[in-house]
Length: 356
Image 1 (cartoon, rainbow, N blue to C red):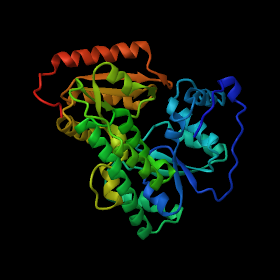
Image 2 (image 1 turned 135 degrees about the vertical axis):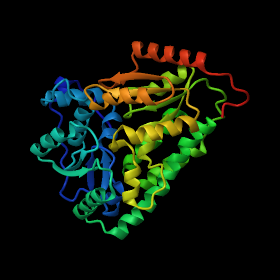
Image 3 (image 1 turned 90 degrees about the vertical axis):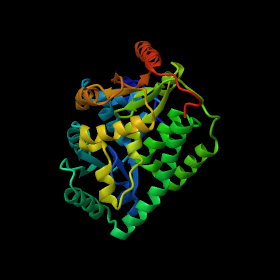
C-alpha cells in the first residue's frame, strides 16, 4: 500500500476510506493463526507491514500524534493505528496477550473510532488447551470449519517452506541477500493477502539468486522485533559483515514441523517470553556459525528489558540498537555498527576454504 508524504500538519485531513460490510479483510496487529482467516475466506492484513512499507512511514506516525497519541508511545502502535484508518478496515484482530503491552489501549481507541476489534491471546502458560480455545473462538467468529482450517494449514505451509528455503540459501550459500530473505520471512505474517501470488514472488527470488558471496567477513544475527530503521542490512554489509539470521521474521514463517495448528503456535517463540527465544537463538548461533548479534529494540517498549537476559545467556557479543521513529540509518548508528563489525573481525578465528 502506498503512503503519503504529507507532514503531520497536512496529514491531519487525510480522508477516511469507506468499505462495505462484506469487506473480507481483517487487520492484524501481530502474527495470528492466519490459517483460520484464509479458511473462512477472509484476508489478513498485517498492519505493521502496511505501515513500514508505506512511502512515508514517519508521516503516518505524525498523523497518529496529531490525533492525540503521545510522543512517548511506541511508534509501531502509532503506525498501526494510522494503517488501520488509511486502509479503511472495519475489523482488526488485537493480540491482547503475547505481544505489545500498549495494544490494549490501541484496541480501545480503535473501538471508539468505530472499528470492530477481535481479541486473540497467546496464553502465557504455553499449554495446549488454553491456546486451542483461543483458536476455536477465532474460528467460530470467522466461520471456519476444522476441515477448512486443516486444508488452509497445508496450503500456507507449502508457501512458508519456500520462504524458509530462501532463508537457507541466504545464510548457508550466500546467494540471496539478507534484506531479501528478511522480506520473504516477515511477509509470511499475512502472505501479502494472497498466498498464491506471494508464492510466485518467492519463487522468483529463488530463481534469480546471486553468485556465492564467499567469505563475507563476520556473520551477524539480527534479534528482536523487525527494525524500523531503513537500510540496516545494507549498512551491515557495507561495514564488511553479513546478516545470516533474522530471529523474529524467521518465526513468522513457522520454522518448526507441527502436528496441527495448536502445536504450531505453541512452538512459535515470539509471544512466550525470553526462555523459548534463548533456546532458538542459541541453536541458530551454532548452526549458522554466527559471530555476533545485533539486538534491535524499540523505544518505549517493555521488550527492551529482555536485552539484559540475552546478554547474560548468549555466547557471542551483542550490539544493542534502539530505534524510535522510522527513518534511514543515522551517522551515529552507522559508526557503532562499523566499530562492532571491526571488533568481530579481530575476534574471528581464521577459516580455511569457503565460508559456508
